[in-house]
Image (cartoon, rainbow, N blue to C red; front, side, top):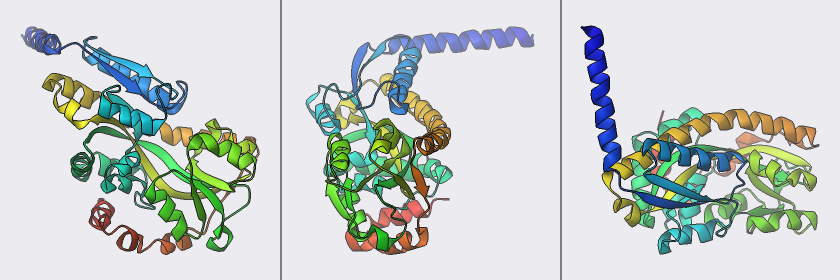
Length: 324
């Protein structure tokens, strides 16, 4: 009797699942990102494509344009607005040019570790944050993946605030990064990443800051000697949609995209922890020296940063820091 009931229940679930899949309307989604297909984030895109197409039984097709083939990340996000892209893989903070709230992703020393990251981005506060980002920017975000901690690399050691003073440091062209390093005493130079290697090689800048994966994949070890273990940002990558476009998709399609994003982004967050250790070993073997920094001094220099430089973000900083 038990086995007959179990078989009947399984058949019913299959029938319901098949009916749900049958209700999914066919659609092809253009997915743009700037990463090489073999890199960690290129693999995230491929995994998301596979998950979506499997869950929808091929009714939802994802067409990936990797390696910036449709433009750099600002151009890719602009493509969401004009409809040439439907999905872009990029950091949450990349949207701060559209709304100040998105810049909180790059707020220094806000996320403590991976456990705190998961508690924030996959808990109630993360849901509230993404809703506020969509309200301000018009972009709908799905999932969050641990990007790896950002560290400072330079052609000289800068383990203290005194040694950091005046360091010509490339930063992304985003307000949060620029003002963070100004407050720490460096001389930030906003610059597109495509210019970084040559600028370091020619001595136009002294350093840059990024996760270890970027330092390795961009071969910055060829023009940089030191990695300062600042860990100043534990960032989040996300899947970005035009909010109006996403809202116009059928509910079944929205559900599949949302579930696939949560699964894939959490899986690759876990993988990044292992990848970071492998990257550190690889960079040491390539001749880079890892330098511990005066972390209390770095944190103290930014202790009243939110209230002073970003008063509109201060309530969110307090809310995120309070998450256990």
